[in-house]
Length: 201
Image 1: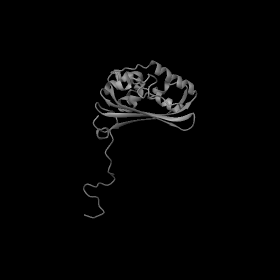
Image 2: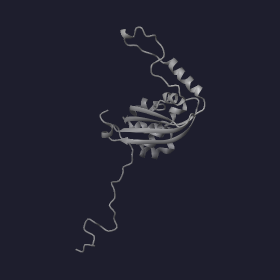
Image 3: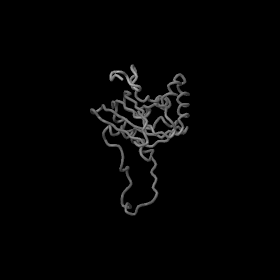
Image 4: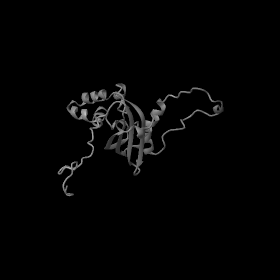
């Protein structure tokens, strides 16, 4: 056989293709994370601090057992609270799972962890991001809720967990209820986390 002739397993005109990627549809028991980013401008820092004060006033403190070593300490504000800076306050007010109540009640997934970060770029402007990591427990219910809210997107919802999650729960809901700010939507990334990356959660 001529060295320049194609071999039995080296057919001309056909490039070796990489393993085709399956659509990221999501399956029960898989772990997924959604990270949302937005640019925020502080319009009224005073309103932000008032919102924190209201939350502290409404908070319920539960004491399970009196500590004899703490008898002489007067009750007061909690040790952990918002810092004085407006962006520290903003970070304290962001709750990443806002807007996901319907999905949680329907048993679509359970929350494994939440995380948020605020990066101040000037006195009144910065970038905020938050991540919610979940374990899928009922993907069909997640898709049903998304399709119920956006029936015209049924095809995309069936093919992509990222689309289904976005349409079933507004990714920017955590910012919508925070007063004294203006914001611009940024990127929303949804990724499947392999078991090895998640560990034994």
